[in-house]
Image (cartoon, rainbow, N blue to C red):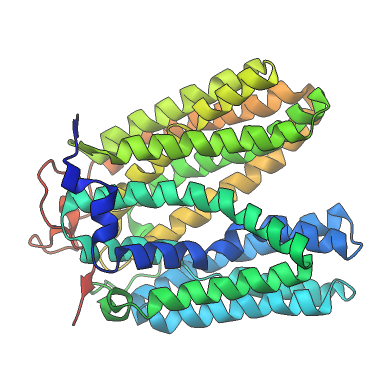
Amino acid sequence: MATEASAHGGYLDILRAPHAARLLAGTLLGRLPNGTGPVALTLFVRDQGGSYTLAGGLIAAYGVATAVGQPLLGRAVDLKGQPRVQLPAAALSALGMAVLALTGIGHLPLAYAAVVLAGLFTPPLEGGLRALWPGVLGREDRVHRAYALDAVAQEVMFTAGPLLLTLLVSLWSPAAALLVINLLGVLGALSVILSEPSRTWRSAPREAHWLGALRSPGLLALLGSFFFVGLALGSITVAAVAYADDRGAPSVYGWLMAALGLGALLGGVVYGARRWSGAPERRLRVLVLLLAVCYLPLVLTPGPVAMTGLSALAGVFLAPALACAFIVVDRHAPRGTVTEAFSWLVTTFGVGSALGSAVAGPAVELAGTVSGFAVAGAGGLVAFLVLLATGRALGAPLASDTPAADPRHAVGAGAPTPVHSEKNTH
């Protein structure tokens, strides 16, 4: 069930909370290098006279390194605190891209080493922010709304980031754009880790276990589902390119992607403006089912105007599903592993997206554009089936290693009680 949020409980209330606007803005700025990485690498390689194959290879190396690094760095944050991990990681990641920008692609082993360094040390700012929200905002309903705002802000970043990159390239060069974007990333990370919530945050005591966050059955179920959500999104990006090529209008691709992002943004705004009661795990199943259902009409591939509308529809439930998933992660992450758990979600989603792109390409070549969009619909349905099949695991938030008095696992109850995923010490 949902009820209208009171005026004081809206997004402005979140942003007016001490440190909240700074943390959100700093995190988005710090994530710019990762959000624009594939586009920036493509533009840089082409400007250097390299092939699209080389650009794809560097992007793949960067993506794999990022996928490996996020949960490892997330675990380090949980063990050592945010400042001791986030800033050095941001600096090393920026150093990798700076080496690439200054040395070019003439020596390929160095170019690949540079992008692997940049990806491996991409700071886990996304997971770090979500670990900070409970301590900054206190009440459960405000934390839930912050998760929705976080999901909406991601859509803005993924839209504005490439535009900023393009502007920098037009003013200077792709190499200069790489340097500036990564400098902004370091400044964003610096803004976050110098804030009081980040400096004073400490993870809750954790049980030593080599699996870390992955020992939670509920978290594994969620990750399995969102792997296929990522697969669906990755396939849409490839299928949209094929659709634009079929119409002989490359600009249509931009419209489809913009509509997808706009739909997600609007869906996230509406979702976050309401207060939801009931278990978030049940709500997540409904949201993922609606997400899958909205992917299915894309196989109709109508004219560009109608297809743009269908793309917007396909995005509507993405941000709400992500916002709800953040709550579920918090409920199922073993005590003391919250940053690592959120980082695993980022990694799984990214790996699924990469696989979706890899699967949709051959599908389009063998059976046409419709098959590429069919991959998206299938991915969405499998994501829902995973949640359905793992209902028992998702229905039991971890409490065995968490003191009963710890309100962290109260997230999802109807009343606006305080929540503290981890703790701030002053």
